[in-house]
Image (cartoon, rainbow, N blue to C red; front, side, top):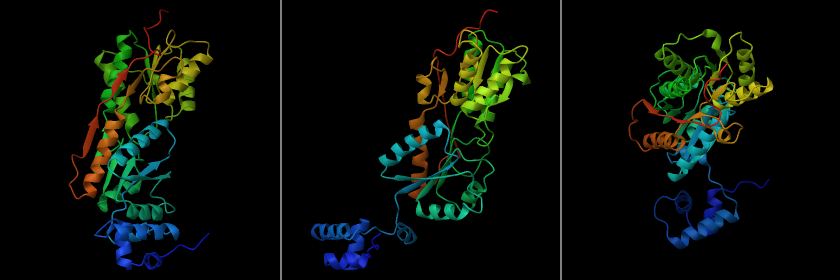
Length: 338
C-alpha cells in the first residue's frame, strides 16, 4: 500500500504554500481558480487524503452525521436509514453508520468516542433504553437526536411515532370488522415502542367495553420466527383469537405463515394486522394491513434537528411526535362465522 502523501508535498508539487493548499482542499478562504486547479491536480496525483479527525480537532466541519444503531437487523431500520440518508444529502451531509449490540460496553466506548468527535452530529436510531451512551450524550451535550425511541424521556430532541394512537387505530379497525377475540404479539422492550403499542391495543379494547385477556398477549421478539411461534401458541388456545395485531410487520408475516401451516387462511379464518408498513407488506400473500409511518417527514425532521444544533441553533421540543396512517389491505376481513 503506498505511503500517504503529506499536505506539504501537495503544496510543493502545486507550487504554493501549505496554507494555500490547505485552503483549497478545505474549501475555505480565497484561492485563485488557477491555483486551486493545480492544487487539486497535485492532490489527485499524490493520492492525498485529508486527515478528517485532524480537521475536526481544528474545529472544521466534517459534514458527517453519525447514525448509531443497536442491532441493525429489522427491515424497518433499513427504511429509516434510507430515508435519513436521502434527507441528509439534501443538506450536503453524508452518513457514517455504526452498529453495535451496546455502545456502553468497554470494547465499544473508545469507538463511540472517536466517531462522536469525527462526526458533526449524531442520530441514535431505535437505541436500547438502558445503554449508558444515551446518558453520556446528554452529559457531554453532543449534537444528538433520538429516532423512534419511546422508553424514557431524555434531554435530547426525540423524533417518535405516535405508537399508542397508531396501535389503537389498528385494533379499532379489527373491532369495526366485528372481531372481539383479538390477540397482540409484542416485540422487545428495548426501545419502548412495543409497550406503547400494547397500551394502544388495550385502550381500544377497553373503549369497546371488552376486558383484555392476558392469554392473548404473547411475545414475538420483533422478528418473523418469533411471530410464527407466538401465533402457534395463540392458535393452540381453547378459545383462539379471530384476529391478531402484531407490533411490527415482520411478526405479522410470521403470524400469516403459522396460520397457513395449520390449514387455515387469512383473513377468512384469522385476520392479521401489523405496524410499520415496510415494502414487503404490499407483496406478501395476502397483502398485509399495516400502520404506515411518515418515513420521509420523520427523517427530514430528525436530520434538521441535528443540523440546527450543528449550526448553533437551540434544539426544538424534546419530544416530536409523528402520526401513523392505517393502510387496509387483504389480510383483514370480517369476523368468521363459527
